[in-house]
Image (cartoon, rainbow, N blue to C red; front, side, top):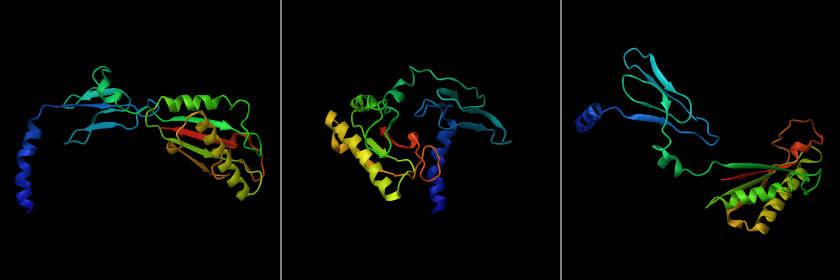
Length: 194
C-alpha cells in the first residue's frame, strides 16, 4: 500500500521540483505588525539563508533570498478582503456604582460608531471591579456594569443578537492591588468590537 502511495505521489513531487520558484509575503496582523516570521535554510548545511520578520515584506523563493518591501497594489486583493482589526475600548466607573466617569461617557458614541462601520459586527462587553467589597458583590457589580453598557448601546441601535455582556468581578485586575483597595483603573468595562 505504501509503495502504491509513493508511486502515485512521484509525478506530483516531480512537478513541484520543476515549478519555478514562487514568493512569500509576510502580511500584517491586527496592529499592523508581523505576527510570525519566515526563515529559509540551506537543505544541505542547515545554515539560514535569510528571513522575513517585518510586516509587508516579501521575497522570492530560490537560491538567492533577499527581503524587500511588498508592492501594496499587487497584494491589495489579499488585504482588502480581510476584516478590520478588532477595536478595543475601556470605559471607567465611579466607585461602587454603574455610573460612568465623566471622561468615559463620550466614549460610548465612539464605540457605537465603530460598531456601525462593521457589517456583521460582534461585540464582547466585559465588566470588572476593584478589590473593595466581597467577591460575590463584585461579581454582580461587574455584570451590572457590562449589562448597563450593553443596554446603552442597544438604546443607540445596537442589535442585541450581536453583543454579549459578562462580569469578571475582581479576577482580572488591570492594576494589581491588595484586598479592599479602591483603584479607579480596575473599575472598568472592556469592549471588543470585531
